[in-house]
Length: 198
Image (cartoon, rainbow, N blue to C red; front, top):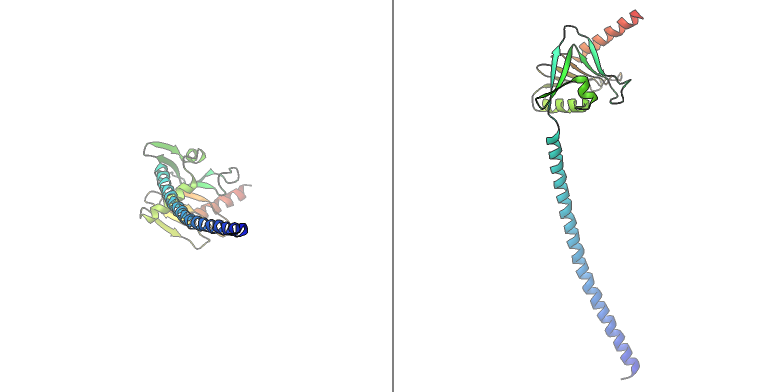
């Protein structure tokens, strides 16, 4: 055999071996990639499960609180958070006709203003709990077609969250069975009185 034929034969053998190695690597890599993909999916399921567990732990860590409403003789409105002087909310947080205390974990009692200002609870906490309570039948929820105002009527107090077309987004905690209309009437009366006195 000639040297050139031997060289050609060696090149062909090398090419066949290279092709066999590449084919072997291709199929093995394909299996490796499938395995990696399966592992990634498994890890994503694990991460999802861990996130759910973390959410459950966070919910357990949230402080349970109660609202204590003590009616006063007057029907005055007290601004607890003034949207014009506070950067906490874009609405006022008020009480109507009474004083409010927040009871956390059955033994820590905070005046309403202190509980909000020190972020023991937030206005969102109050509204989220009221929504959950309405779903659980602990209070009665009423919605208005004024843009989205909502009342949560408990046996000892009422929460009114305005969201009307006039731009009123204020939150009130008031005596039982108070309707948003009662609060708006009182606000209008106060505004008329202030206008008369100025």
